Image (cartoon, rainbow, N blue to C red; front, side, top):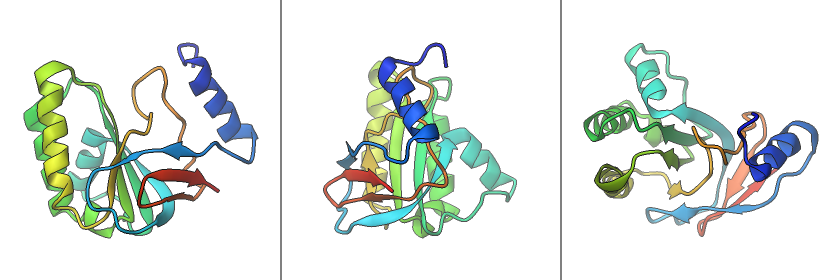
Amino acid sequence: AGKLTPDAEDWFRRTMFVSSLPEMRVKPLNNAKKEVRGLPMGGHLERLHRLLEMRLLPSSRGRIVFIECTAKYSFEKVKECLEDLKRGGLFKEAEAVLICNFKHDGEEREKIMSLIKEMSTEIECPVFEGFQYGHIHDSRLLDFWRPLTITSDGIMQWE
């Protein structure tokens, strides 16, 4: 927590001790035609994948799935994880998917983001990107008990 930016620290404190969180904007990646509402679910891409492999992945029904990834996972590993999670039904049951921080740089990042944009067209639920969550100093804490709504044009509102 000592390395959090002032904005991330403020978000942390608001999440823990204040009833309201500021509205945020995320970018729709596929044809998000509806407003979605649900509880957050998610975390690190490889951890979600590992839970799927162990048959311990909880249902994503009624959830907005947040996904982030550190740079130590190659493009090939990211692709494998996303494809397996898709085949395993994580995205099919979800209300929406929110792609957060993938810490890859350069060409590797471009390939991953291109893959994500391509896959988002094959996912039935709305897919968004741009929420500050993951292994970064400007990360936002997720309250897994606080429902949120995302409009089709990407406005996030926490209840």
